[in-house]
Image 1 (cartoon, helix red, strand yellow):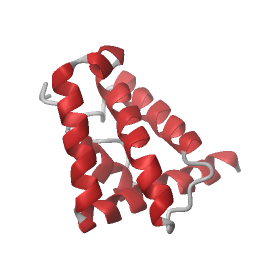
Image 2 (image 1 turned 90 degrees about the vertical axis):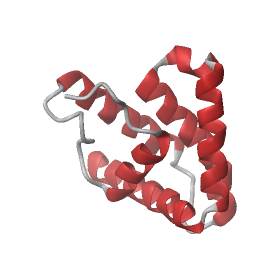
Image 3 (image 1 turned 60 degrees about the vertical axis):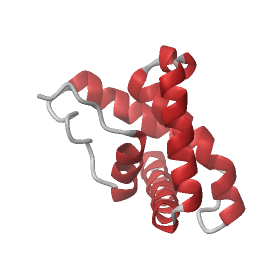
Length: 120
């Protein structure tokens, strides 16, 4: 198993794909559980977000990326300067790249769908 962790963009793509668990998490109960918690927290964050409303997606982009950063790297990552650089770079990429904007939209749809399934 590799010690290399996926990037924020890789995680966002994974969420958008709707596939679970993330590569590298399979067979690791702690990482799988962490992913489940992260997706639940992201879904809670997205309750009032319309995936077809561009302004809603712009407003939720950075909070989503922060939640992913926190879930994947822990509390200390939020104050680590190099992690902040990574966070800002990922945010800028999603902001300017139409393909990444679509990935964000699909991630929101997938998370909202998973939340509806969990509620039934």
